[in-house]
Length: 230
Image (cartoon, rainbow, N blue to C red; front, side, top):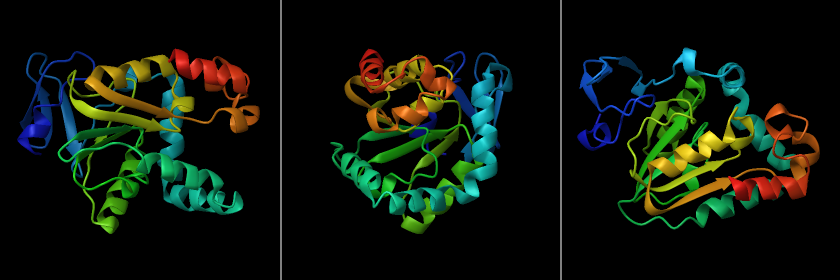
């Protein structure tokens, strides 16, 4: 692990700094240990993980092998409309050489190929198996990103760390979307962009039936309004 990365990491539940000790990260005050496996530090605490988040962790852990294929198939059935929109939007991000960029709920790192390679990329996801797929995809692309197994509602980074923080399509799955967005804002530098892209009008008819959407996206109009409140 690079020293500049270690300096940006903290205990996501207390904010204390960490030190590297063998194959673990150790809290300097509490002594709490966070294991590193396959170059991916894990900050998941089952005690702090809400039931909904535990479910989605389980779901993506068992379905990660088919995720990229399913997304590609969905793009074809939709004639590429949503995929083209997402790619164009990601490609429009203003990223300067040397910027520090975090993707919350990175999944299989499918967005990184649309971003320039002159920045430092970090990714967080609640599913370890999705992160393993992300490692594979990054290696295939010849790209680099540092990955972390963590709940996006408890990001393991100090305040005022990143030049850009973004999340695409993950907000609907969080048990507390307000906390997730608050965490994104916390780790962003003053004046940095925090970008959230999620399904609204076209998908509301289906997604409003999901528990995470029922509270803030009953229809297209309230969905858009809720995004603005976030």
